[in-house]
Length: 481
Image (spheres, rainbow, N blue to C red):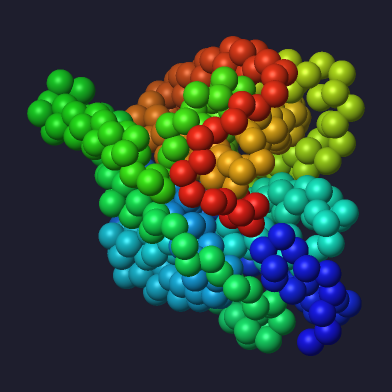
């Protein structure tokens, strides 16, 4: 292999075709992981039909198990890859993700599917941070900012294609939603074993806090359990109180451990950076509303209007397709208005789209006047708010904490996704009539809109300020987002 320039870690950057091969292999892996987040939402009603009419509360764990495990393992997986090699971490993550996808497709029941989704999330947690590290290794320094923007845009492209792809796959059978990952994953493994650059990991420093990751998983899971099952158990029941109390205790234990561990999942010092904490909090709140919007739109189209899976995908697609366009072109708006005002405006637009749906809700299908305008407005809101908040959070960090801080923001967004699904399930319940269903969806959209407004308030607290120096515990490289 010919050798090009050397990066900051002393890893050889491949030149010519090898560099392009690395970019393609990494991009395909990231695309499959992001696509899976969106196509599974479209399959939720089909899963209920396949598994003897399983309740929405049970099916929500197909989404939440993935998000919880991904959120908890993202930072530890990135730090383990720093110690044992990014190439090895990427290939292991892709192998686990591919195997788990096959297990999801073969699942005989909801419980098996939820377990396989948790394993799938562990693979994704290893794949995502190492993908950016390998991309940076394969890119000359002067091209890295553009490469990072392209890496981030892959998620937007997957969001745009996900609903339609999910609809097409569900029409053939919901198991194809997961089977489609297998040939892509196998091809990526074969190509990656030959084409990805080797690196020399740094084995110094403490191991990541895996026990803290377990505590975080338990805390988020217990909170989601209490919210999802509150309708069946009752808010005053001992089981609901026990789940919510366990979430509080596990969260406190996690925070106490993070304050003392040399390599915690979340460094408390990061949250003392005002702009970072404000942007991350706003991103969490916004993602709660976004997850609620995505799930309710699928359920509304299929269960209230009786759309097929493919028609649902086509109905949802216009909103996500707007997102990558705005993400790549909204720079002048951010420079003119500032990150806080831009993100707040996006949050408010997103909320306005949800209010449109609530006001126009009707059991009779009126797509052009009742659904499409709200979908387009929410798409513009996402395109303005989410990329801006992610950029603002990263921009507030000192260089030596960019990697871990960016992972914390991603973790917060995944936590928001769990809460959004849980809140949606709680508000929708099991309506007995069409009118009751409309009222439940309308309530869900109003609550999600209110959360978007709270996210706008949090975004407005952003201030332009130099990032303070965070006390260094362990050396950190820019390869782990």
